[in-house]
Length: 330
Image (cartoon, rainbow, N blue to C red; front, side):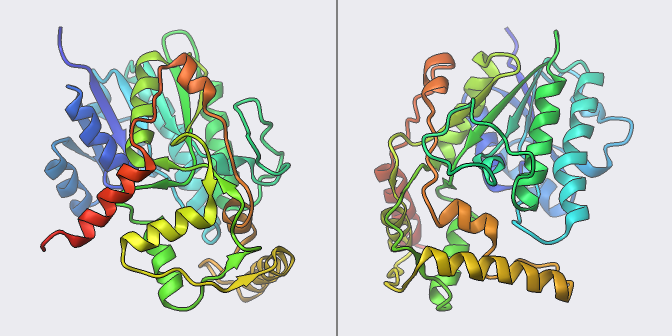
């Protein structure tokens, strides 16, 4: 029996790169899309077959999709605010293009990397499961565009073309190029403060647990299905962030601001950014406040029951790996 072929978008990123390693370790052949020479070189170094291309300019299709069994769509625009045109082109237009190209190439499965962020704008996200309603107007460019992308993926499910969504929460681990570096930069620059003390619970998902969920969704996911994946029971947000910072030799600050004050700062900062026509992110956005300034917990019981998801990497093991990576000789 020949090895299955997986086609990965976003393979030069944090989740996508780890996914390539996981697929290769489980005997898959991997092709991966890259839009720059640096990205293509990284994909080749990971062991994937690099495929030049850009999800925002797929055009008539991607010849290298022919023969692929599953597309793993992890490419995304990640900022909370900023360039609306780029956010829509990447998260919505790019997803639509990949769905169309995958169908045209005869790919049988499409696994989409979703996010709990699409729920921002509805009620507090507490023990949310897959039936939790997506608000009509998610707060922020990232939640709004990722919500539209997920809706496209779910609507595209059809006989012969199964689509599945996997939603991790608070992705972390070795190789993180987004969350931990931003936390570390905020702390070392003196711009970080806990919101309301930071003791509220949060769900987390180690990057290798994300990959486990994606692969098991490809193999066993129900067509049209959506699955949350996590590290298991929630942890206090402050405890998790302090532990992450400690792996980098950084002491967490003690300064805290009330949630009500943070809400005013977030709303005011976004208004000022719009007035000034700024394209970057304010120090604190409403999206960030909802995702890291209050409880966000999700329930992954469905994934554990339906696709055999285990979440094999414990927080303790992941943190030990981060510590070891920092202390390893250069």
